[in-house]
Length: 498
Image (cartoon, rainbow, N blue to C red):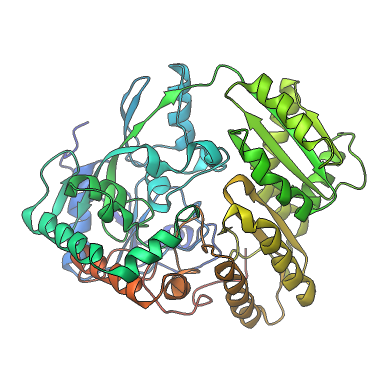
């Protein structure tokens, strides 16, 4: 099918469709005016142009797995899951439409002896376009980083400039605008200091201004500006990714600890061994393993999952020696079924805790779900977070990509006064995070539950730079309004209902 096949596109306004697309995994319930599901680029362009010319806000949406409230909105929901062609894939490169499921692309790559390097837990129900929009990472980010690292080119529709392809010459006005911003930002000591201080902190917060500062060609800037932009600069239609050869060997270990602080203190030394994955589970994860038949010491209150895919035998020996006196016990997981069981446990963590604890009066509402700090700050940071929820008398479950300083903090929020409690806890969690030099989102991306705090994380001058970039691409603010630059209260549109 050609990119621009010309055929009519239904814009859906029936109650069932509008209700279905009113929510995602963030808890927001915002009813759109209409929903469109283009099957090719031509349909997408015509539909987006029609909406933009009528002043209708456009929210691009992939699989709806977003936890920040950036896949819902008033106006038009532009679903991309029918743009699902794998255009080309070989052992080194994949060119896909943005509605392709991450898991589907991974299977195609694996059949050729390769892998998609970044590996989100939601692989089976998240799209490549959504991955780019949120700058997704996943279980092996400690070695392979986020999707941004593997982006080679992008193709997108912008209502102001039309189709933009990073492999082609960009419109003169856009290219000049990007170079003007580069010149301005390079001369601004406050902006430079802000991003210098953030080096080494995993973040999907705000716009990726280093894409402008660190690249000389407007096309390259465009590629990496899309990472983490949550559909506010343009609507992606194609993405080109670099693939890598699948590791031939892996080793996997489970390190058991008395508590979160002890586990976090071991992380910097483990990183020196170059693991491909370094994940944290608190006492809940341990209990689930015991329920599944694992023979683990009762005093275990935290565990680290450690994987090596480079010189795995030697690295494993070094790990066992290192943790001999820094853990209750460290176990090598050699059996394939045990490995699968452990990764399934970690990958399904959110779904498991929701099934176990949520009811009509209690919910895990995402607001501190993706905090990230420098690895050296992990121990004190986790202690501060735990003290906060102990003071509040709330149960909290903590897990995540601890090798990158990225933890998913999941407090169980009661319905009584939940909105005011949420405002207070979000503000306090982010105050703690920022005091440790961290970011409010490591990989889940921007959205309605984070936008009000963006200026606090970056400061007024960098926030103004974000506004300048948005003005260049979307002066009418019709692309995913409220998902990036907004002071709207985080509880507006948020529902306690599942």
